Structures are given as C-alpha cells and as structure tokens.
Amino acid sequence: MYNLRMKLICLNLWGGTLLDEILDFIKTNSNDTDIFCFQEVYTSPKETRTPSNYQSNLLQKIIETLPDYSYHFSPQFHDRDFHYTLDYPISQGLTTFWKESLKPIDKGEVFIYGKENEYIQIPGKNQIIPPRNMQYVEFDKFIVTNLHGYWAPLPKYDTPQRIKQSEIILEFFKKYDKPKILTGDFNLGINTRSVLMLEEAGFTNLIKKSKAPTTRSSFYNIKWRQNDKFADYIFTKDINVKNFEVMTEEISDHLPLKLEFEV
Image (cartoon, rainbow, N blue to C red; front, side, top):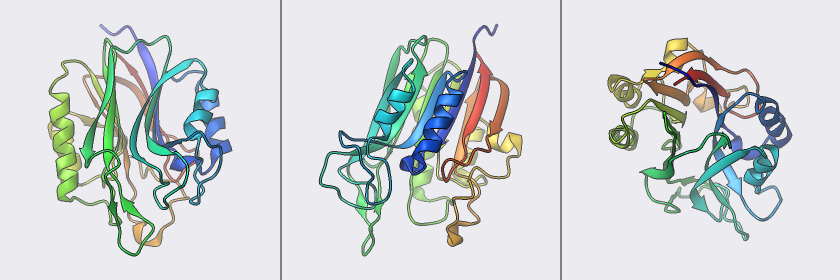
C-alpha cells in the first residue's frame, strides 16, 4: 500500500558554471521537490570563481536557496578545481538535499573508485582522474543513493574500473531490504555491460525505459565526445514510478532528471 508521493531531481551542476540559472532552477523547483541529488558541487569559505570558472562556494549558495532543506555533502577531493591546484580551502563532491519534514535514519558514503583526495595527475595536462564516491540517505520507507561515476579522458565505454563500480554498487544494496533509488552521473554509455549489470540485478533503467534521446545539453560540445549521448541515470527497484522525464532546462552540460514516485 503506497501512502507517500514524492518528487526527486538529479543534476550534475557543472561546478556552478551557469550559477544564476542553476539557482533560479533550484528555487523554482523547490516548491514541489522533496529531494535534490547534485554532482560537481564545490564548497569553500571563499566566494570566487576558480580558474576553471567554477563557483567556489556553490554549496553555500544552494543552502541559501533551500532554507527548508537539510543536506549531506560527500567530498571527493580537496584544494583544486579539477584542473588546477588552488591556494585556498576548497572541496568538490556530491550533495543530496531533502525537505526537513523528511527524517533520515542514516546517511553516509562509499567510494566506488579510489579514496578521498587520492587522484591521478594526467601527464602534461591540467586534468586528473579523480576518486569517485556514492552517497546514500536512508529514510524509513526507502533509500536514495547519489553518485558520480568513474571518469577518464576516454569515451564512456566499459573499463575494468566501471565494471568494478557496478559491482560495488550492487554489493552495497544487498544490505537494504527496502525500495531503492539509484541516481547520478554514471559516466556510462547506455549499452555498456556496466549498465546491464544493474538491470540484470532487478533495477529498472528509467532512461532506457523512457527512450530518452540524451541526457546531455547543447553545452556538451566536445567534438570527440559527440557520440556520448548518455551519462546520467535513474534506476529504481521496488519503487512505484508515477512519472519520469529528462527535463529540457539547459543550465549545465547535463540535463536534469525528474522522478515522481510513491512508496
């Protein structure tokens, strides 16, 4: 018997590159959204743009925009903006926000690649292969996980790291006998073995089921990646899905995902 209807939005924020548009989007959708799952969130005591044009205190800006929400921040790396080392405190990671009326019974994170702040510098480039984690917020009736998957300067096909990522995800969920929502920027193509592993374990791939043409906005214009139409997903298990859509707002190089569901 379902008695709780809710709405969730997932979005990679592109580090707050389009800050005003992002904050307007969040504020507008906060009227009827219970949970927000964000990737590429920076937090810092300094209010400035980084050399890569990311917003150093993006987390603080969102907190101000969502005064009636609680949140959990899970850092991946510190003291850099992905491309450049910085001389002031800054961290990047995942953040899940939920309405204060919701009372989580547990929250935390697990690393799906590497360890916190242990990254690989790509020789000759201002780029790293960063550690990646998945955060979770467990409520009485269901659990939500928010992840940012393994990235390297390659197309989003299967790699040993991505297969391992799916193995860690599935092992994590074995502990929970309740409805599950798995969302985030997976950095995975839709026809990969890494995605199929989740489907074979009983998760419904809402991107595939909806036949969405892409999860990338027109800002994703890197020529050698133009065949990478997918990166972001929502998977559900034992969730009564009422509506799902890839939203059209172009406020990042990713498109927002919206899920309305009952538990």
